[in-house]
Length: 192
Image (tube, rainbow, N blue to C red; front, side, top):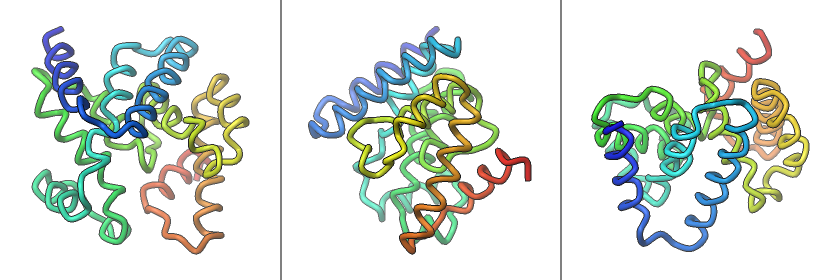
C-alpha cells in the first residue's frame, strides 16, 4: 500500500498549480476512467493514479522531453524527434516510477502508452488511453467520440481498434506523421 500512498502524494504535489484547462482535462479523464473501471471491473485505484498522472509531463518543453527520454533510455523514433510532445507519456511514466516504492506495471504502462496506444496494455492501460480520448473537449478532434464512448463501455479492445483505425486515417488524410507504435498497435488489434 505504501507504493500507492507515495505515488498519490507525488501526483497531488505535482498538480498544485496547473493551468485550468489541464486541470479540467485531468479531472475529466479521472471521472471517465472511474466509470470505465467500474464497468470493466478494473483496479479502480490503479486507474485513478494512472489517470491523474497521465499528463504529468504535458507541459514539459519539447527539448527537455527529448533530454529526459534519452536519460531514461526511452526509444526515440523519428516521429518523436519531429513531435517531441509524444514523449510526454513515456517520460511521465519514468518520472512516476521513481516515486513508486515498488514498481507497478499497470500504472507505468498506462501512462507510458496513453499517447500512441499499445496492443499489450492491460485493462487499466486501455481505460486510461480511451478516457484521455473521450474528454468532451476533444470532441472536435475526435468527431466519432460518441461511437468510441459506446464501444469503450462495451468492449475495450473494440474501442482501441476503432480509435486507432480512425486516428491513423485522420492523420494520413491531414498529411501528418503517424507514430510507428500506433501502426504496430493497430495491426495487432486487427490480427495482422
